[in-house]
Image (cartoon, rainbow, N blue to C red; front, side, top):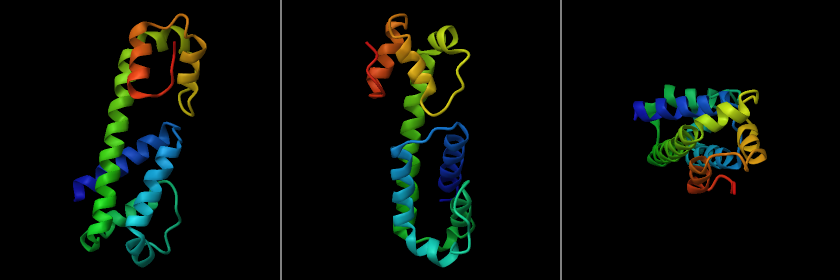
Length: 140
């Protein structure tokens, strides 16, 4: 369980640091908050939310987590792992296009995919296919 919570903390932290903010992330946070409601209100009620502090609190009390909280954390970790794998795939397939057309664009908040979209006539088919494969945006 400890490894799973550490993984969730790391991925949430990396996601937040990269500037990525999405409804999917909000849903994961909501899911963990609901699944761990008892633990959060019991052990983490004085913790100021944000910057992973609630997850750190849950980590500190991992030996007291209920099954529903453990499941919510596990499920969030699995979903985040899938997102990271999908984004890694796109980053690898679009690496040259990003270097060529978007090197001056600051990552985060969808700016890189917007840059690829703006340059869709010049972007490689490989990159277009990767974006389509994960359902990010249609770049035709």
